[in-house]
Picture 1 (cartoon, rainbow, N blue to C red):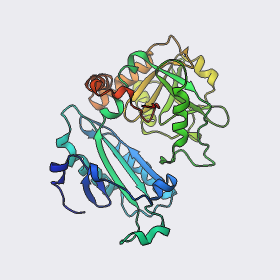
Picture 2: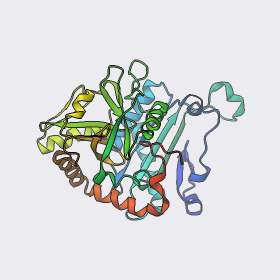
Picture 3: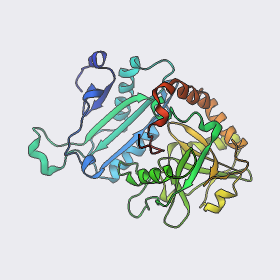
Picture 4: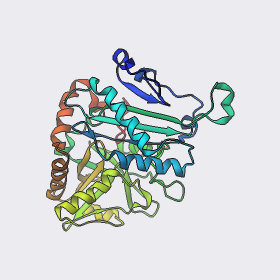
Length: 335
């Protein structure tokens, strides 16, 4: 790894790319990369609490599982990847405010396609990119959702069935998520987030987030057959165990959502967001449910950060940037 440690002082945040740290503005991959050609890339995105990365090893292990199954010839261990991630954050820390949290984006493709090898003066190897940017970019529009709630929209777009590509592999072939977001954006009302069914008609997942309902004191999430088994999803089971709340996997029909007492979605950047309605019909009393509140409160206690307060503060901080009008991985915007 080249020691260009002070490049970031002149050019701002840096990105790790194939053994080097380069300016974020100069971080580029080839037009011949398989990621661009086929969406042939596995990735992870993490967040920190009080600058400490949460469940980083779990994210990296899922990444390496995908690398293995996709047969990407990567010669980096989990310890080496962890070191790269931590060094990337360390190099960028001076460009973060004290109140900022880190958001790592880790991308690995198999590199440029072999038929274009004559373009390059080096051996074709996997493309490895680790970027680090403020978490608030992702969650800037989400603070209001703790008060207004999400309206989960059952879209026509189906989740990708595991017999085509196992969704437990987090990959960049995600146009079906984008199509779900576009469809949800056409639904009347506000705070519409896509909720996809699997090919059997059961609720599967959102467009990058997992879904839960609460019924008669039991927290229920779809089975992991046809959804990305999220790190945050798994953590809900840990938190529920700490609280003495039963949490199970079970096939969920749309009817089950309509008659649920509470509902919420989970994802790495925002942790947990309440769902107040499903297709514009109230879930329960259409408010932030008590069990859902207890889960996010316990999560906040565990990590030493008031998650709801933090995200609301980020929304206020970014208000002048009109971030709420920008597209996110969870909502489409034509702006």
